[in-house]
Image (tube, rainbow, N blue to C red; front, side, top):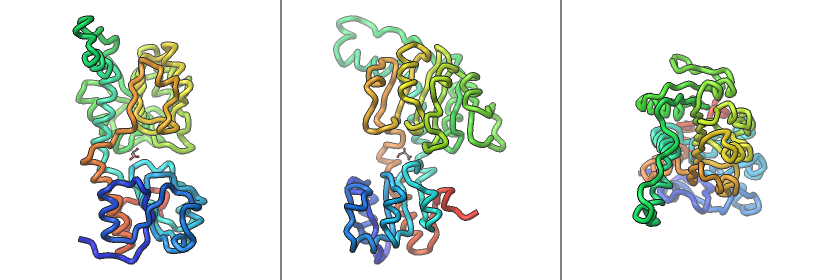
Amino acid sequence: TEQKLPVTILVPSNFHDHAVDRIERTFSPVRIERADPALVTDEVRSKVRGIASFAGISAAFMDALPNLEIIASFGVGYDSIDARHAAEHGIMVTNTPDVLTEEVADTALGLLINTIRDLPRAETWLRDGSWERNGDYPLSRLTLRGRKAGIFGMGRIGLAIARRLEAFGLPVAYHNRRRVEGLSYEHHETLKGLAEAVDTLISVAPGGASTAKAVNAEILSALGPNGVFINIGRGSTVDEEALAAALANGTIAAAGLDVFANEPNVPPALLAASNATLLPHVGSASEHTRRAMADLCVDNLVSWFTARKPLTPVPETVQV
Ligand code: DGY
């Protein structure tokens, strides 16, 4: 049990219940609809010392909170938080790595297999009575057999996906900002080089300026007509228009997407693609894992306000 601390924390109105319970027991939360300075009264603005968040936290929002010390983000990806601005202003940013790694890797493999074997549509066939009326569901055109997988973004989650792919018998290659020391998988200096070497590309790349629309028409065309693209990272890393065109033209065979550039909006051209399997950003979305993420988010706040020791600070805010 945590002792109550006289610290005001901003919490989104739709935040994880377990995190809210713990924050209520330990701090003084103020709930807000979204990270908009106009929604915070002047009195609260000067009191806020922490934010628990999964929404975008802009530089302007940080600047509106003169006593802000820490942003404890819920989730491993923090591309919607201006971490560089936070670091420049001495504001700590934490995320929730590790606790979701295996869950997201499971989702990636599930999405890959569902995309290749067309399982969601096979279930629809059963449920809508087509099996009884029309007989067996058509054979899937694609198979996992004989594929070579490429992972874009070889961090903790990329590695957990690679281990699973190995167990399925697939050779693995990767492209990452930096080559990962001590890893025997085939490394490619460029995403293009990786896409040329594989037929199954799985993106786990973080969002942000350095990866914006990295998966473009050229990369998709390099995968070839048997190509499958899976995205479990961030929608912003993909040129969605080029992807929809590649799916419609047969430039690649299929795609499985858990993330989109402008969630919860999904481009109509992707909704219309029968060779795309689409999920509503559920990579880490089990009760078990979201609770672990909630705990780590709050543990970061508690550790900061009791001992000035963030448990999982993001790289930008760690002094090197
Ligand atoms: C993450 O942890 O970054 C997931 O995308 C959930 O937000």
